[in-house]
Image 1 (tube, rainbow, N blue to C red):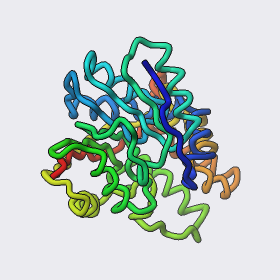
Image 2: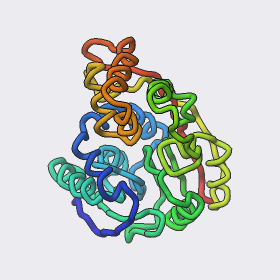
Image 3: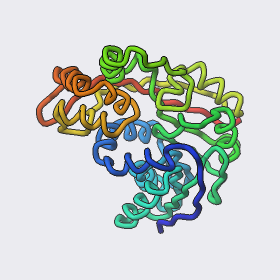
Length: 283
């Protein structure tokens, strides 16, 4: 059974344009981060019968994978702020054989789904976008049972991610007046500092917190992309890339050139990346 059981609203950009951009480029986005989701699912070690929340589930690939792990008696709820992604996830799951999957479109900072409380919370890159991280995680704590476990994948610092350094290097040349971002602002790298995330988790009543590094090479623009395709993907599909577009055609050409040494024919533009796999327990 696959159902959409709630719908919410938020001003967050993921509920609008960014969610639709992700959906329009779904194969490329998922091709880039599939290995991270697989590593996090393996680390989490789900067991049959568990009730799990997949936070920021997107189009649902990790949700359906978790469903296989907790079946036949478990339950998994995929929650995302984008109605477009939730609708697509429900359609895609209905075409498979998964059971007891529920889909919730809502803001996890303020909503407690009807399928709570959960034994487990899981999130592949879905936990870093709360306007107020402390309030968001306090709400997550309300969703999970005492002694429940949470497993997160979050990007390490931009300086530890070669793919980001490449893009930043091109941006520095063409956009020298670009303001330096707040490292703790909502966004992909909000939890790059383990000390900050630890403080957020502890103040939300999570403990036994651990960080394990996961290093890999991202296929920028998806598996098999050429340097030109990788650059075009970033320019058209990501906030970071759209800023670079302001640098004109030469900025795009320089980004393509920066990717060229990392191109492996048939595999794509493979650039180094570092992720934190974080585990915390409700106390």
